[in-house]
Image (cartoon, rainbow, N blue to C red; front, side):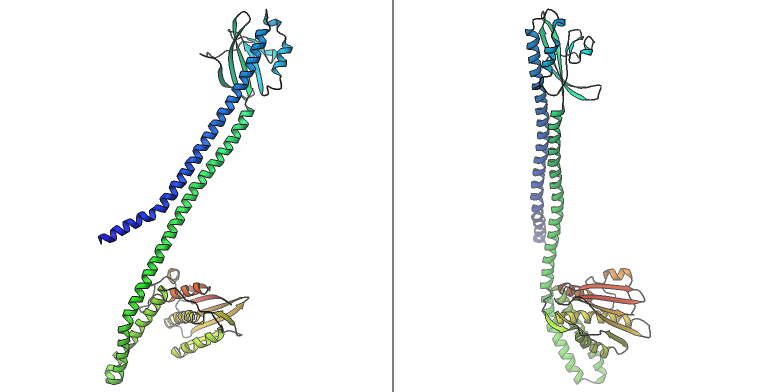
Length: 428
């Protein structure tokens, strides 16, 4: 018991490793992409601002040199033509406006001459140059650089250079798109991790199921071997005694013999269900197989009306024995269903129809039928509504149909009957 607990604990950790490794890779990759996206965005934003700062600095140095070299007695002596030529220099793209304020906040120079002489409230700044953003009346956001310059009798002035942010915003937009792509890839990796985790768990369950089936198959073979040996003795001895004992003891011995046969049949069904279906393909006529099966049923159940509706010979390539087993199972279920009903005519019909490269075989009975709840569980192993049954009949039918590539469908109504439809490929 202790060893089993240790094994289960180890199995749990072993199964956990693939998922753990997967998520370590996914999370590291996602984190790397997200951090890279953030750094790229921040660096691009900083690079854009640095570009604007350098441009503003270049303009400020040029204008300061011009103003200092002009040797003006009065600002009114300034040649505005030269001033505007400097402002409109093609090398300086993206200028929103340039203005010069005196120490009292009056505009003494401006790229828009109509604003000269107006007073503005300047922010109190501890050091220059001072960089900030400003929203214009047009609602445009501009980058502003304020420089403190000295000229004209050593008076200080504030030179304000406002630049359009279009170039920087263009760079930032590209960085946002790139960051968005990286974030999308990171999200995709996480979703992939979730999907992969689900798939790994699914595969592990399938592997576990295969191991269980292998164990069940081995156990079934051992049990079948152990059961068949005494069963053979019981059958042989009961048959021997039936011939030797008085009539009053023969009936109980016949019951023993029949029950031994039933146990043997159940053992065979269990073996068939728990072991892989081995397919042996051969050519044969379907109508001949159906007639062969029906002969046995008609002799065993004379009270049941069997009808075979098949107009022509249909040659197919399939596993004859496995298909025969499917048909016998389905017919036996149909017989059991009609025998339980109180209807005068107990009818089972077999309808065969050829459709291109497929054959449709219907087995229809007017038996007791099944309700929806029973119908859903009908093909589940070990589910049965009969007092004496393994519950493996339809489960075996379903398994064989899957191996033979046969489409299998059941329709039933309580009190009306059941229709089983098989779509059989003409050639397997």
